[in-house]
Length: 203
Image (cartoon, rainbow, N blue to C red; front, side, top):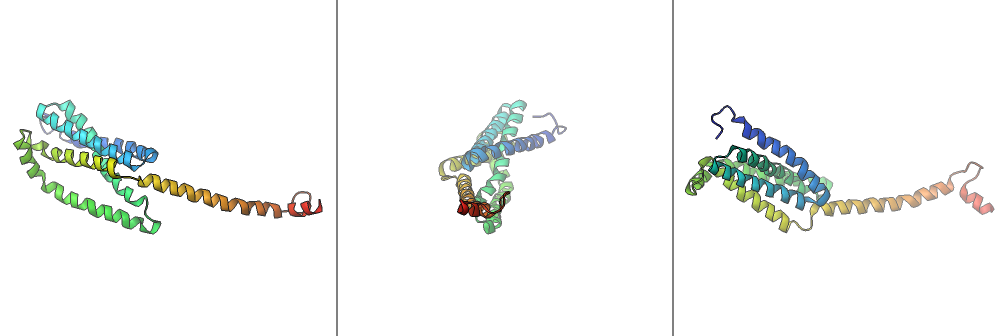
C-alpha cells in the first residue's frame, strides 16, 4: 500500500503515537469517571481502529490505514493500563501480587498472539480480505469484546470505590485529629500568661 519498504516504519510510529495519546486520554477518563468508562472507551476505540485498518486494506486506502492505526493504538495503551485496575481495591501489601497476577494473564496473550498470525491470515483469505489484515480481525473481536465486558460487568467501579474509601479514611482522620488540636490549644499558654483553661477558671 505504501509503494515499497521505504515507509515501512510509519505504521509502527502511528501505533506508538496513538498509544501515547490514548494513554493520556484513558488516564484522564479513568481518573474522572472510573476504570469502567476509561478502559471501556479505550478498548472500543481500539476495536474501531482495527475495523478501519481492515477496511483500508480492502479498499487500498492509505489515509484510512493511518487513521485506523492511530485509533488502534488506543487498544494497546488501554491493555497496558488495565493491569492497574487489579490494584485499586488491593491492600498495600497485596498490590505487587495483584499486578503480578495481571502480568501473568497478559503473558498468555503475548505467547498466543504471534502463533495466531498465520491462522488469522487464512481466516482473512476466506473472507476475501488481504492476508496481512488477518491479525486485525482478531484485534477487532478482542478489543470490542473487552470493551463490552468492562462497560457491562465492571460494577461497582473499583477505582471509584477505592477513591470513596480513601476519602472516608481522610475525613475520619481529620475528625480524630481536630479534637486533639483543640485540647492542645486550650492547654497552651496565651500571650497574657496562663492557659485558656486557667483564664476561663479565673473568670
